[in-house]
Length: 91
Image (tube, rainbow, N blue to C red; front, side, top):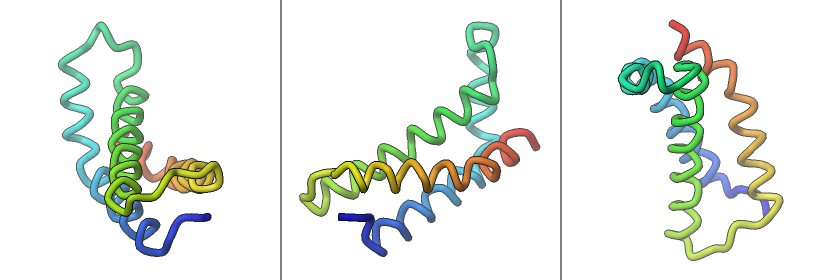
C-alpha cells in the first residue's frame, strides 16, 4: 500500500514546518560544536528524523503496519524536498 493522501499531506505539512524552523534546529546543533563535524548535515539529519518520527506516529495512529513501498515513498518524499531543506539550513 502506498501513502494515503492524508498521510502524504500530513508529511508535506511536517516538512514545511521543519523547513520554516530550520534555523532553530541549526542553532541547537551549534551548541554541540566542535563535537559535530558538520552542523548543516547534523541539522538535516535532525529534521529528517523528526519527519520520520511523524511518519511512524501517523501509521501507529492509523494502526497500520509500515510496508516497504510506504517506506520507499517516504524516502522519495524526503529526497524530493532535500534541496529545500538544505537551502533553509544554509540561509
